[in-house]
Length: 244
Image (tube, rainbow, N blue to C red):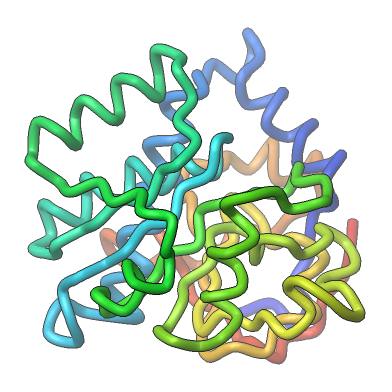
């Protein structure tokens, strides 16, 4: 385990995605989303195994972070969970429409009631897949209500890549929405983001076992020590953080 966790800011993370999806990198957005969602499902299994409660509420936003949540819902179903999807602002593009059709084909429940707290109370764990590293404030309805509920601690939360409403570099706001938000679990995708220095939750995972050494070296990243079949690696919450 490295003594320092190297992190990527918003621009570097976006540049890395571009490199991966370039002609040289060879990946497509749906491949990366599939790998991310698989990693999220494994983090949930590690942090909250089915015997801890099978009802998983996945709060999915309108971007790629939400797509990761939709993919995770499918994998969770096959792992024996009972996923419920909150997806109030669907994006009608082929990749997202396809993911939704896959979930309907498995009879996975979608629940977009305005009262997010009522949906959350029916679940055992909430997955925060609302906003990723490219988020720009303010948080608009109905997502503000979802963040308020997750911040309240009504149920344990696993955040995908970055806690929603946090600035990718600076972390939570000093006051107002999200200022008290500390998810119980966090899975950083491909690499941790600088705001992880503000994370004080229980467990932190790095997900995405696909990054090659050449790309990692270009961005100054250390590839986590993945074990066996795992797509995730756990890192200490209190590890020293360095922004690249």
